[in-house]
Length: 294
Image (cartoon, rainbow, N blue to C red; front, side, top):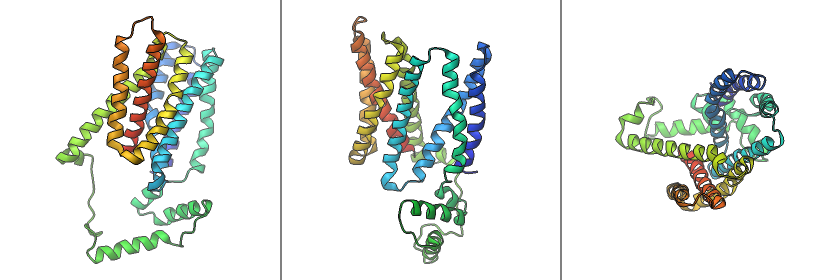
């Protein structure tokens, strides 16, 4: 179906739910629709994230991923500011839901992933997108570049230089993850890391109201502190690799959170600082993790 098509079809029900939520007066119905709305969030965030990386060359993928994360953090800070300025829940719901209607234009603005099109043998469509990208970026790409590349790969296959002949393709299934011991081990490790990151990140975000300072200020700082974490992560990943940066940032976030247990209750700002260091570390590890999974 393609990434842009999926984004549109996930976005349509989500935008309807968020706009209906803003006019409801029944708390139970509001909670139910809000829960359903939350089910669409992973697809709304992760599919565009993957699409953006697939449109980039290998050299710029880390940069693109970190920029997306920075805008996410900027959105969190903006939400805190809107919450502070618009104290009425109805007005805040409208301010955070109506702009979603504008995102329908993405279907006509964002191109489909050429990599996905190539995997479906839709070479002409991929060629058109690649040529458009090259023209906009001021680059020259020979006509029928992808067709020529496909012929080149076929020649290599006929000469026996490819490991796998095109005439006998193999299809992968989700069960292959569990069938091979090495992949299975890595899958469970990454799944555990994902759960650990999600629990800590969301826990720190939702617990901002219990830090003893203004709810709006705590949430705002929690968003702002993520931005330098992504900048540092971008710099270190290209030099130290993914594994060491992931381990160090998770260790930093975990130690900061555990340290909060030993702070006296009246030392509010020490707790806030440690919590923000924890948010810094776990946000950085989440960004690394997204890059590893991709």
